[in-house]
Image (cartoon, rainbow, N blue to C red; front, top):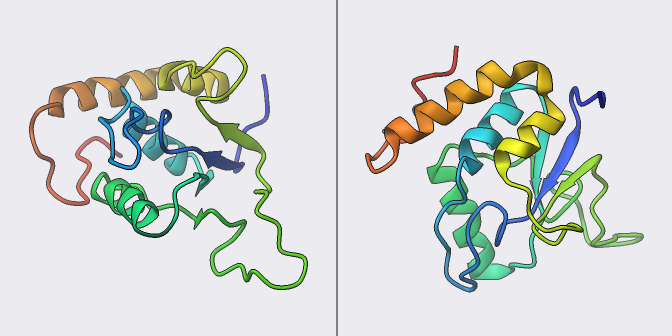
Length: 147
């Protein structure tokens, strides 16, 4: 088992969190937000790592915020990273979640199992909660399942 406690995880947006529809925002990938929230609760730092810029990037960040996901950083290694000196667009992360992996996107349930196989019961509760709420609007920022 891989030691995954407190890792920095870079997550792509189009094709990973949502279906491809660039420059629009596609439909949520199955269990994307439940898994991301669970990873946050496990102490991981999430970085949104995407090709999107300017308005399209703002739209993606806002979309995630409406689903209670707040990234540690967006297209940078830490909040407020300056683009001076030795700045690199390359993100320094422990784990990258992207639909362009060899073999393509494996799905959020498989990602959870790889990162936290000991917590499968917790994840299945999240999936059930997500399915239960599917089609009904959640109150902003409210997750009824967590602790």
